[in-house]
Figure 1 (cartoon, rainbow, N blue to C red):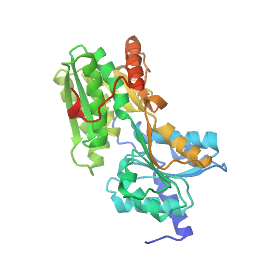
Figure 2: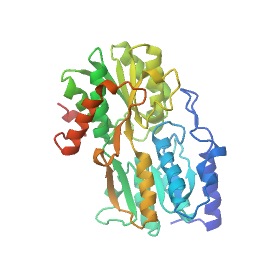
Figure 3: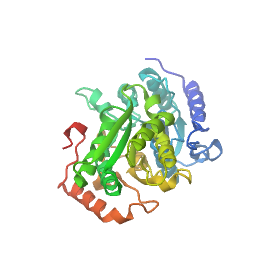
Length: 370
């Protein structure tokens, strides 16, 4: 196992963190960085709490969705736990070895806990956590504990979400809003994770209108092609535009920064065309011209998961294994910004209560949606 000296590790951590502080914008949809180097929370943090190493997913801060939600958890940790932190940016051509080296560098730099954002870090985290038993590692959307065999690592956590439950709620909203009984779904990478979003959305919509038409398109079938799946606003726009042209009037995306193109498509399609955001309340970060077309967003509280991981570390109560955030613990939900779903709120909330009580079990496989 190759290790860096402490001095080299700290220097390299600093360099990769600075790479994550500037703009990550693609030039589409106004997707600039959510925080510039000047107001980077990690540069201003001076507390004596947890020393958090954050390794972002492809797209980094500025995606107005997945990574930005993780950053909010980092901000809260600095504010409420007196944490300090550093950030590491991913690259589109990363592989398991480069991701593992990034996590090692953070651990060598004395950062603890190390939080990796995105399931792609799972193989790397499973390997590196075994090498650094005194450092706690957590993977957002991870499956790393499924890769450690019979040996449960006490310093490895996978922070997972019941995305299907939140997606069910926005599916209900879509079915109640549509005038054509024709809606759509744009997914990033076609795999088990994003299929949970699709399955919940389908189930929620069909609970309202059993014969509703739902168009589904994924931007890539390649599990390793995150760039096409999650950093592709042009692809998201093309997929959604085709759905609107075909008669769909509500399109939900689970595609990271690619979803910014869905908002563009809805706006250009005109009155009566709606988009549904994901992960964070995307109405709040969208351009003003796009806001009248964002019906709601499926909230996936990555910020809560990141903060609670940091707090658990501070309290010496980190839970190893899989930790799931569902509707019962407010780990997922839906947004009401813009007031567009106010008329349906009682019906959506009633569906949420049935999910919490167990009266409704939301499927995770689209093929099992009846």
